Image (tube, rainbow, N blue to C red; front, side, top):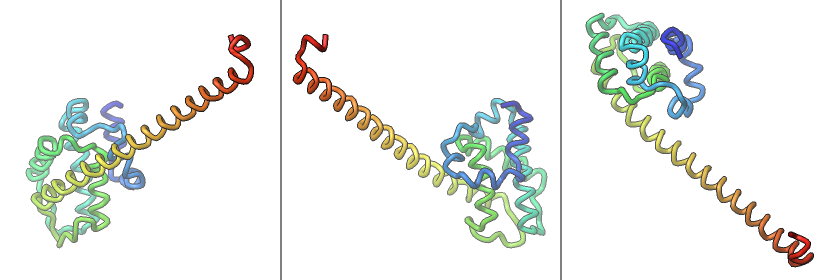
Length: 171
């Protein structure tokens, strides 16, 4: 993925595409915020966040829009403190905020409101990732059991055939 592809994929216009498949946001192959900052530069994460926040402010009809300085500070906080969140999870956060998941924002949005909610969101994401990885492990174990049962059935079929037809015919 190039920087331009990253910037065009992680936009408010694509927010609901991400929100449709929440599990993919959590365990998909998309970059974490830290990986995106390293690969595409911190300004890329800042650009993505700025777009999402401006879109959220417009959606919320906020009278007090966050200043450019506050935007820069929040972007720095996100890159430093929420670096293990996936970029898709950041978009999902704003989709959930639009859906009222984090309560109502009354005519203004403050940076601390966002960072406090991001802390809670990060905990939820980590819990969900744990559940999804556990489920994947259970499925993998069950698939392995089925394969071993099939192998055992095949071995018992061979043993049965040998006992019916004799060892010499098998060789």
